[in-house]
Length: 399
Image (cartoon, rainbow, N blue to C red):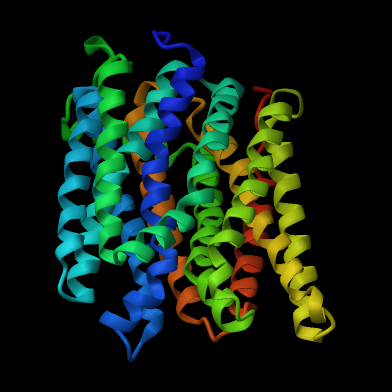
């Protein structure tokens, strides 16, 4: 196994900023959804949520391409090519004259944004495995979480002095800065001797191997359900603060509070995963999420929360974001532990399936938004309950 020439600290920071390109592209858009709805789809304001999920859909499509290409040509060339696609799409979004055009450009932008997710995970698998990989991903997630924490504030600030379209110029500039640093500082992690040509027979054999790997499949389904909880929340949360709590102006600050508090999830996982193990952390995480969702849902249905409704919802939302930090690194590490020889392809398929599947699950929850948190809570309860059942089916020798 090769080792990075960068120090572990700089490697983690570099990967976190690459991943943060995706978070910025999603979360900075949230304060702009009412303006996009008013300008481009005033008769059906819930359709503006598709600006978020269309980007995520593009990421799912892009991972099917970027992962295998990184196995064939190396990690760095594919990541830089993805950055070029992302930049072109951001410019198209800036000039989009209609919602339909904007959504198509956002799908293309998501395809470009797939590089950091799929190839970045494979790059980390080149260097680490098992609990070591889970620990590194947790550190990456801790730094990465800072960007979604401030992204809505960035979005609100940009719109205060310009407009929602100018957000895409910010995305373009951030991506260029981060990818230039990556290109100059990060060595290639996949030597030519370890690369797999893009032959259909090799891709088919790798697909069959992945399809028969029970732990990888179960982990992928759990990733799908976990991300569905997140994307459903992102689709509805701005509307909940606006229409249910009537504090739309405070949404970016509240979102920052949620994201900062949720950083504890990655921190806790990095500290305990080596001692406790990935599966036990995952089971405990889903049990807590199901229990918390049931409590808040019951309180809202019964109408007994009163002035505590907002604090209860904030705590619940922190739990959703903390669940990502406590679960995604472990699920990725579980799925990839025995797949190092096809890391790029495996990461591509796993990420693509989980991302596209989560969009399919999250869109109906977002479109069911009725001015209350109830559709979101019901959807998350269903997703997290199924994930809890699935992860308890995983049996693995100690990592």
